[in-house]
Length: 404
Image 1 (cartoon, rainbow, N blue to C red):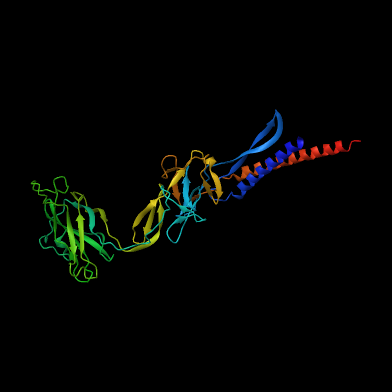
Image 2 (cartoon, rainbow, N blue to C red):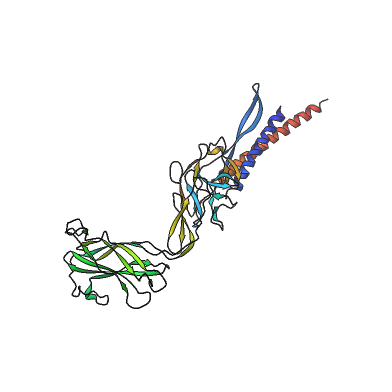
């Protein structure tokens, strides 16, 4: 009896040392979760028969977050798992060290692909963007109500500063070739509450700049644009106009098509303050190539291009489990769901019980080396004590055998 009891203790201590050794060896593995060995006693007819390993329990406490500065390194600040597709099977991980494959998939070191909430691998499919001509501009200014009508207001001339009150660079517009043109806006006061607005771009072929016709802006007594200054519902005081540059036959003269830009000046005011550009936004872009990605705390993946544009590729699918300790470790920082863990509860990062994502960060192993070394000493002494018990049993048996 004594031999079997002590032998069970040796086997149990050996299993505990295996677990501790595995923890220590993975103390630098990103996203690793430590385990502990649990024991149970063995009884038969109230007779103690020794001990056994009852279970090896995984500890899913969050490890410390360490900054890497690499945009494809992700950490989960809280609960949850990344969802990967590997060999047509879903696997889950806390390791967010990703790379991008040549065909645009987000993969871990073993080639498992990061998925969205539907389990489909996330992929960047557009590595370049074609040029898009600007078709619309939204611009808002404040015009100084105390400005005077300039001397030559009736004969506008870009080269004559006495024919307008203000000129400002209102931003950049793009033609159909993606060539950028700096657009200027000219404002000329014509009466107490009326102004004329003009748009202009440099002439791509050289020569005089291309200038739009005047657009009259009428303001009410509160300094707001008045779309119906006559009060007859005919909307004479429209707050926008179309700037047409070039012509249908020859385009802009640089090979690009005719440029037609709808300019919305809604939000422009006339107040007793200095002239100020408050808003400028436009569509259109130059051609661009893929330069990298940004990942938000909610898991949205944004592809960035050299032309300054970005586009959402998709959203990272996150998962959580009612009993994470029931997951089966498969190696390579991956787990698979089991009946004990329950089915994956899918969601978006930062919602429900799923933590938010931190880009440029990884989650370190949650192994406490100091505690593991202490546990190793205790397990070693437990092993030695059971081994000594076996030796004692052997000595007693030898003594009994040698009795005459």
